[in-house]
Length: 115
Length: 111
Picture (cartoon, each protein chain N blue to C red):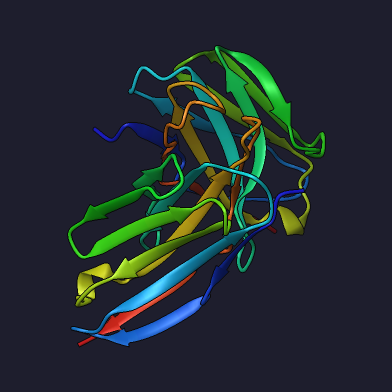
């Protein structure tokens, strides 16, 4: 079983739908992250959770709502998305958040398409 | 704001050849990471470089860090087809803030 698992792998939704992305890590890490990967753009950090507490919100629109019920699970709730939100959403985890020189471990991502 | 620039962004090379990918960044840092991403797959950690002059090698790949020049290199030796992927560098500021990624270098190794 991979260390970081994301579901679903693919999601197509209309602009008025509500859906959620799920991420689960089996590595015993304390920090979890959401990134957005769009074509021809660098990975964009969205949210950071450290020990279940949100420590960073990178000016993400409120139509994206994260939830971290425990250190192993991270959700991204989606509501009233726009076409420009179509992208690959990657979840990652690391032992701690910044400053410890440890790599992040990434899931395979959810490919999101907004109609 | 930290900026991370990779070049080239696209690289097509023949098997057996050597090449170097460059990662320049705009502010003080002594923590740099290299990742590999295959199409449709997640990012896989390759190297963690944590000090000036750090050099790490794994198989045909070797990464180095020069913090004074704010430059990291990823050197490919005798490329093989299996190395075809997109390679990202990511820099963490010394203050311990977020990780900033480069745009990625899409490498294609042709037989």
